[in-house]
Length: 269
Image (cartoon, rainbow, N blue to C red):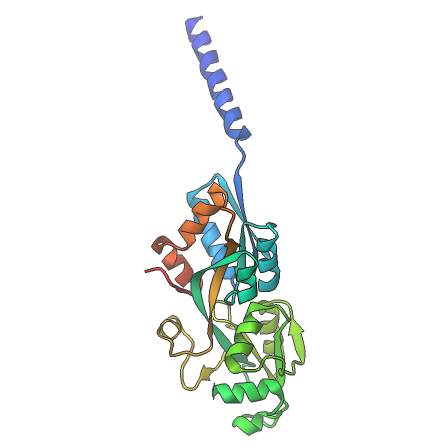
């Protein structure tokens, strides 16, 4: 009888413990924005959730402009931007934290014989000043510039560095980095740009003024077409405890190897 009573007490205690565990809800950290940061943020989130199983980190790939707006309006904890915040965005109440650096790769179809371009040539190819690949040592074929939609951090970074704001003549304006890569891979005359942190196996990545995009050349500044990966948060409102801990992890040296593994350049030593 004593054994039966003892067993029942243990069973009730275990059931109560399980119920208490089930009743405990996971804390959620929401991120929203840059599609170029997808691999980086998902890698960081995966590792963090593995180490903190009571936290759920979500990611909404909407583009940098939308992510910045979401952070400003309080619709997410952390806005993701693949460009620096503009002065008016900071003035409106946001602060930026650079998490990593990223090279913007210039990509062409795998059959294109061109392997290197200057920034001036890249600008001319996208602005329509150069319309045939044979003008830069390539095949006799029309140039088909493909880029991102207005509001994209990748587009903003590319155009500001190459001096092509408002003059690019895109054949297609696509809403994600992956879509640009796919379009370039399918069109022999295409040229586009994409985050170095993306999967670029299906396209040819060009050197720019003799320098290949890599972690080393981005960090040293030798590769000129690069931009920051930014966390945008409200300046006058603290993050939730869960969001702050995730934020702190992402900018710490503990996350550096995860960021590097995702193809970006960590800024934390």
